Image (spheres, protein in one colour):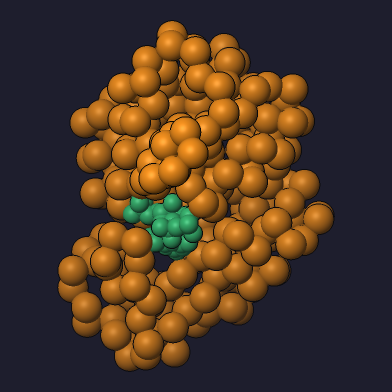
Length: 212
Ligand SMILES: O=P(O)(O)OC[C@H]1O[C@H](OP(=O)(O)OP(=O)(O)O)[C@H](O)[C@@H]1O
Ligand SMILES: O=C(O)c1cc(=O)[nH]c(=O)[nH]1
């Protein structure tokens, strides 16, 4: 499954390499790579792989799930489709509470004590996912864990998740994408080392301009 989803993401050109004009991530990190999982929604075949994959993660790793909660904004559609496949209730957590209407941060119904799985599209530092977990816990949810499409496998995210005692299961990861991208000639072998060293130490910006 990891290889299949990595191939899917590469096929729909959801993975962008831009070493000369780095992307700025949500965390502020400058990156030579950006994975735009939002594009999976636009390709029905890939969307089917992703949503059935997320549904399988939930059936296998979180069989007692009672509610799925998406992260804003990129996790919302995946939470909705996966919940539909599993016939489960679904909601989402806003990045900040509305300042009008019901002033909600959590949208949809959450009953304190309910067993919740957070659906996130992508984990870089893990900051967004953990914030959502905390908001839901404060509202009385029992968090079973996170289901996500992609993780960079950064130390920062793994430390954050283990400190918060939260499990994450991803459909694919950075190492698999890089491996498949090299095999299928999307990137040159030489660049693999640079990409992995960026992932292992994102504050070292020596990769800028160095990837072909
Ligand atoms: O692991 P982290 O360091 O928190 O980064 C990952 C988050 O960043 C992206 O969201 P973004 O803030 O770009 O917003 P969007 O979901 O509205 O596109 C992505 O969808 C994740 O939610
Ligand atoms: O960390 C992020 O903001 C981020 C990285 C990435 O590769 N893709 C994305 O959508 N967000």
